[in-house]
Each structure stands twice: as C-alpha cells, then as structure tokens.
Image (cartoon, rainbow, N blue to C red; front, side, top):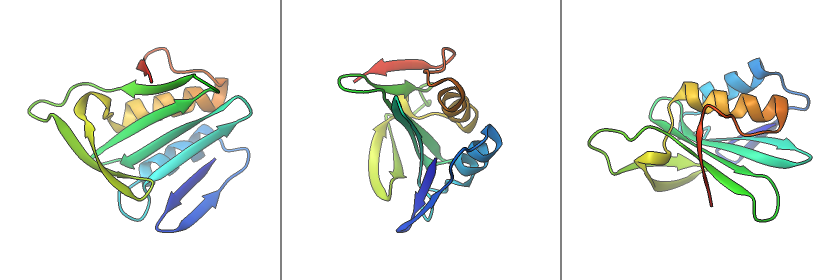
Length: 123
C-alpha cells in the first residue's frame, strides 16, 4: 500500500485494514490525495479528500477496470477534487463518502475482490 502527497510517497508493506483506514482518513485533497492498494492481481486507488469526497478505481488486469459508484449528491452535477495531486471535476455519482471508500478498499485489501455492497461501473 502507498499513499502519495505533495511529491512524497509513503509505502507500507503488509498493511492491515487499520493502516488502510488511517491512510484514507488522512487524505485531505492537498498534501495527501491518493492511496493505492497493490496486489498481485491488480490495484485499487482511492483519491480525493476524506472530508470533501473520494473516488475509488480498481484495475484488475487488462480490460478489467472499475469505478465505484457513490450516491448522487443533491444539487451537484460535478465535484471538484484533487486526486494524485491533480485537480479534476468528477461526476457526483462516482464520489463516495469516507465509510463507503474504506469499505471498498478494505474488501480489496483482504480478498482482492470488489466490495459487493458498493455499486461498480465497468470502464
């Protein structure tokens, strides 16, 4: 697992779900804006801000990329977030709250699978 921010990369081998949760909670969309869970069978990335909103993307190999679906945010078509140090406008339907992003990342960390309680869209 790595979390990146402001040119720094902070790797951690053999992370626990507690480590992962703390890293995602640390995302502020400024200094820290990306957490990546690396597995032999793919990667899952959480980007953005724990306070403002998070995007979750999974790359499970060639042709198998997924974006987690959040709950549409009332009154917002797009949400401006910084992920991986890059600002962007994301459709509100792909912006998750902290609990959902942690659940998606924890499921991938522990099982290598997409969390079944989260909606996913194939890219």
